[in-house]
Image 1 (cartoon, one colour):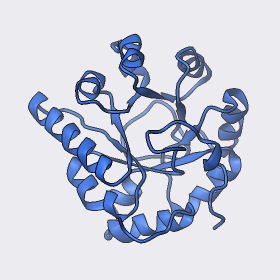
Image 2 (cartoon, rainbow, N blue to C red; image 1 turned 90 degrees about the vertical axis):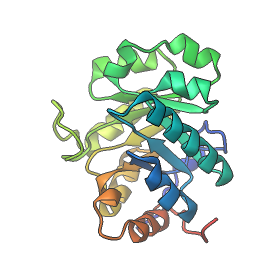
Image 3 (cartoon, rainbow, N blue to C red; image 1 turned 180 degrees about the vertical axis):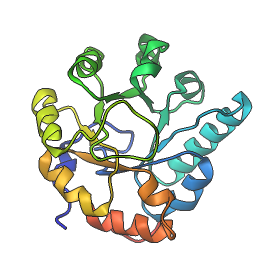
Image 4 (tube, rainbow, N blue to C red; image 1 turned 60 degrees about the horizontal axis):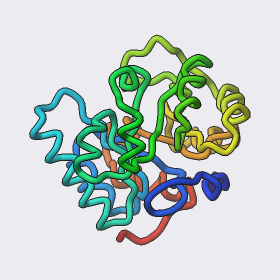
Length: 219
């Protein structure tokens, strides 16, 4: 597979350009296990957890990622991200409804936004996001969604609409599909269950790093 060549233009992280490989995990234990293998961009997506646990996990993830030169993106919990001095927050369309984007920007955080259709994309672009995510590119088992497979063609359409804003491909992505997503216009490919449901997550991360031109010795 040809390594991603678009990542050099994907700007805006605490550690330089956005990495082309963007895994998402639902517990900080995954980060402790896999970030040291060479992950340089990761999202912590915590749902339905007590407030104390949310803060503890985000704080631990922040410290871990700082040690390993990895950009941490906090999903949804923008207030805690501000309080804990994080650099990035990701908001879905429903998350945007209750978010104070002015406070997020005033705190210096960068913002990624999920999109699925033209109306959501317009809403996202009004916020001058630091990346736009499109999905699901392929059918996904991560969560139930009213949107079906978006397809690679829509990636190209989105990239034409957003220009230099980094574009994240998410949903049903795996190593074999990554090359097609990059060729279609994605700057970054996000993976979730392709790693967490794999019988050997460490080996799968190594495959992703190779596929995205990021293979290297562990930190």
